[in-house]
Length: 315
Image 1 (cartoon, one colour):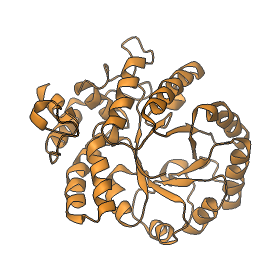
Image 2 (image 1 turned 120 degrees about the horizontal axis):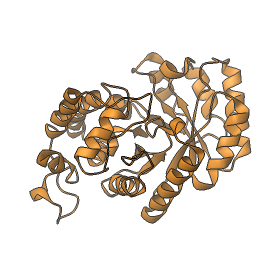
Image 3 (image 1 turned 30 degrees about the vertical axis):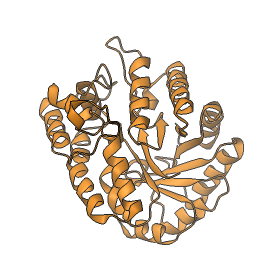
């Protein structure tokens, strides 16, 4: 678990069905332009709003692309209850390289209860787990000590850490050097967390700018702080704009404008974003530093990331 893993949206047709062609195109785009892996059926993918049949379709499409590109697929699974989480994990594990499982939400169990929850889910499947620590959504805070205990489980490959800040627990977790992956889950904090020792990030914004996120992670690995900081400074306004309204509404609108998906629809209770918010994200994307083309024959005279920037500029 390292590098940039693109957290995929689930595109819909105007009729409200899962848009298989758009999903396949987006998944391939992310991997072709530098993402290390894909994440399907996460919050960005509106997974709880999909029917079981739609969830299966998303998994099959993403699994096919990941196999074709030789990339790992991480799949969201889990609910607030342990038994239901085990059921979902068993259903999705056959098509996953790892399962992204949120800390049980709303109930706010004890730390021991959280550890037992992940141990039980991990014992039920034969793929590793990536606990998703996002206390501002789950209502459950895990200290660095509890997170280190969680990472000590044999069934856990790493953690998606999304505290909404570089707080003391984040510093202590990264300083613990557990040997397990710590993946940043807040797009805006990817660069500072990488600099502090995170192994990578799971980023929704990487659907739109996979090459820039991959280049930023590569700069950190290469010790090129100036380049990494420049890319971070360009990506920060984009991430802020994409999350200015409930995700993934703004992201889907930008992906549709770029031609990476056909339609920007989101499902209720999400709403379409305000035009001015989408315009802000578009301006932020256009203002990002240009990267050398990954492919010599790339379009737009070599502008980048991956031609997406020029697609947005033409619309």
